Length: 334
Ligand SMILES: [Mg+2]
Image (cartoon, rainbow, N blue to C red; front, side):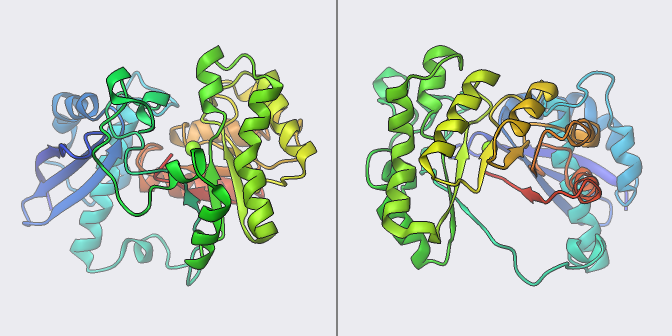
């Protein structure tokens, strides 16, 4: 089954998502995807990666993973890694189609019958434009001042619900659907204001409010995740964590307090709070995660298959997490 062509697809409605289709001489077409910076990733795939892939056996997934390693672009979730993630997913899709087996069977079989999920409390306009992760791209800013398209809407506008409405009501609605975990990011706005270097007592108080509302509404029935999006420096991130500790919110985890390209500081954070630290979907490749694990910088290992290198890297990272006695989990909504 030789790879004969590579096609990239970018949809106008979701321009951040890049779909990749790998065509083969068998007639099968493998589908993969990644997120963020779609045009840059498409250029990498067409200009650089395709010459490595065309004519190769699509079933040699691990050999192709090694062949696609580039001289630059190490350890991060940069363009090369995101592009290679989409290719790896497409290759596994091809193998599944060619063998008539689900990919989980090819990876060793199902480990459990069901997987618990949590709700990332985003809305229809969340990170909808290609400007990346910013306050203007949450979908809550005025379009006249740079906000994303506000035309998109629907019945599950969860971002508005907790940011401007009542997070407690949202928690009731989620529990009614048997969703027992919810993630919110109420202090991002203050990070953008100071480049992550300071947060005031009043801002902390406002940031805690959605979490308090959930606890008041449903008690401990809802697990609560605090998402910090890697926006803070070490002392300020610890200040935020301590506010959640002293408030008795008892979060299920606190996610990406710092950018994980400073593993030593991330380890100091993780060891400086009683809240489990989740990190990091912002890392790419097994080498980056090995350093995270060796530094004991995470309590829960989070990865994104569309960013970390694909299914092949994801399985390797999950295996390492197990070896370090840690749980791992997937995300695809950052
Ligand atoms: Mg995240």
